[in-house]
Length: 144
Image (cartoon, rainbow, N blue to C red; front, side, top):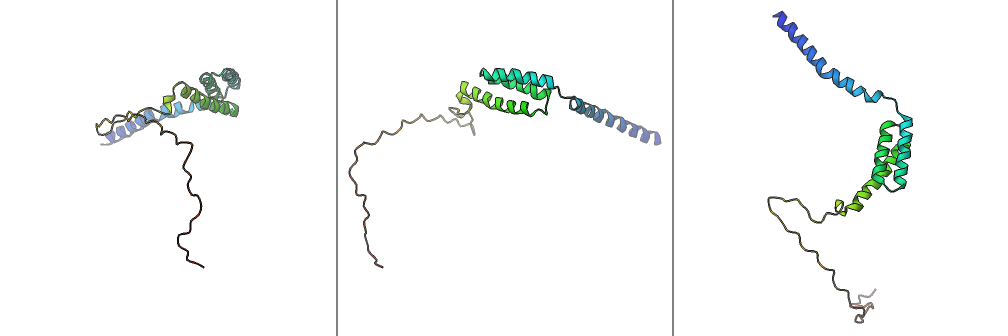
């Protein structure tokens, strides 16, 4: 009875080490890397050049690499955030359906509803209107 008990404890111990030790060592690897400030500055410079040319998606990638090289750089984070916004605007400019789709593609309950055609705007009102009374009328006078 005792050898089975000791063997099961040893087996649980090794399984615990097998599952937890690799995850702990992998999680500590990239966090201990020192920031590469030189690479960060180089990527910021390349990103600013791409940004000045209007290539916001390319600039975003350069700034992302700068943030990855030095996560503590506030300058890199600011440029990255700005490039993300302008990159999104560039994508929307190329394809307006990203923000305003024409027709919903979702079907509920297997029922397909065809979209209604767009209606034309109502005709403009005539410029000359009949003269209406705009004065105030007293219908019943209750007094003071």
